[in-house]
Length: 149
Image 1 (cartoon, rainbow, N blue to C red):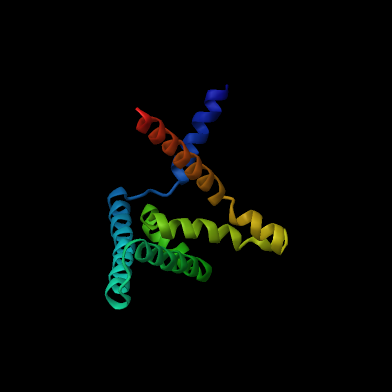
Image 2 (cartoon, rainbow, N blue to C red):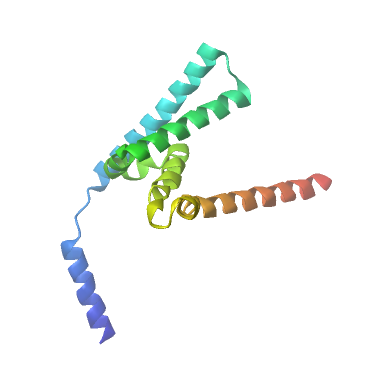
């Protein structure tokens, strides 16, 4: 009996679900993701040749600018439209992470400014930060142990 309901439901879902063009989606993701990376590289070259930055200062400044741009575009609602057009191509690490932090934080009004903003901002970013920190500590311990031998 349960299988009959499941198969009917799956038929219904496949009937009403929009059909996707995979090749078009992949091309859009590739070109939009590549364009975001190209913008990041342009910012890097601009900072290097205009202000003479290099090394960690150059990398950090480029990252901060990309995070700011991703956050600003999310706040203006532009990043959502880019995401609908490009799909996975808009989840380039820096700007996609900025989008994932800012977009839930914009919905803070229901819980209030302090609790809402603080809690909503780390809904998606929290697990990523925890996993990143635990992963880096684990790799550091492994390198330390391997270095003893």
